[in-house]
Length: 567
Image (cartoon, rainbow, N blue to C red; front, side, top):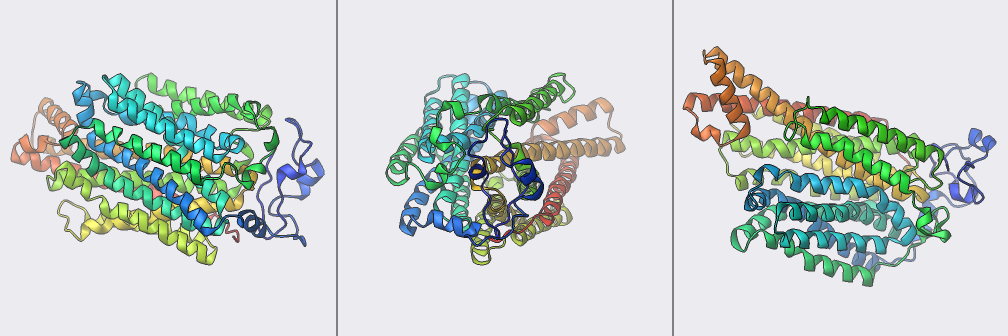
């Protein structure tokens, strides 16, 4: 297997592994033993040649700003629509499932999409290295559109879930491919700013998708929420074919690019990584709902993930000539800590997205639409944070301070929620979630730069693909942890309160079951019981803020250990 050096120094001459290993085979290291002892990315002495930053700039001089703008606008169209899809499913999934008398299975509209993405994402970057970014993003758009068509025309819940699987397989590549295309076209320092516009489009899509999907469902039917996406993706395919180059110079630089073929694809590694991700994430999706956490299925899936993960490491480390994910990337400090920052920050943000609507539904008896609207300050903060971070990085060339500040700002939000949200929240106090959104948006842009700055361009696709996987893992774990903490503390508090009032144990069990399974039980319960339920939920949601704060604290610690390379 080709091994990666520990890190590269952008101030030194660029050490490109494949240039030193033209004759390397599956069993030949990229560096000779003597070289490995004396040379790493951080120890190569300066040379009279161009620096890494200069090399990157030279690689991108062929693309004018106008050409880049046209391409990015096409990417914005795809990013907006794909993210709008996610929020419109949130708004319409009860209606969709109810039409097929399968409300209890509505969560599979999300689970199927997420697991399909986890299973296919690892292949996207590598395939784009071999066949070009344009071919892969067109494929991703096609799959997403086909999935929407299947959902819109579905006559059973099974067909609808199948459509979500197909869309998930396409959606997994949209984010990573957009990041790769931008990094192919512009120097890294400018890429941060362009990436922030993608984040803005994604945020806008998430903001508008829910209300738009709800409106379509109420007027012409939920099916048109999906069918209307098909012509948009067809337009994106046509524009991509016209404006996006079929191949960029960066793609020619990957090891063995001239022999592009299916033989270069690490199918065993890709399959094992997909199985690892699916078996690891599935318990978090079904635990506590479809199966109790003590059910044998849950530990069985975790055990399977451990086995598949071990086999993946074995295959990648011993036999893969072009690994789907080079394990040497995990020896690079900024890559590892970048993934940790992304995963924990997303976990904290998902906790916020879970707790805020629920808090206002409980304390103010807000409708679903109004409760969801309370998330807008955080969503707007995402967009602003991404743009500000991109501008700062472009101007200063520094990303470590941006990531440290972003993680710290997010923590402020969770502290304020913990201290001030106790059931009687004013309009101004509802804005306490803004710092959480700002921090997450800035982190997305900063990690995009930090990971690229620390890795060789030959491994860019794999390194950026790892960011997407960390987002998925962090999101699933964060949602599960926050939900479990909220419900456990809520049930314990409610039981204790009712016990103190002398309520019989069998009655307590029924009340707790109703309160945890139906938020509208508050309206049907006796006033004294309803007040106890509200207080129990408030305490449970306070626990969720502690969980989010913990994730945010981990992100701060990880940011401290980053190295800031000049870009």
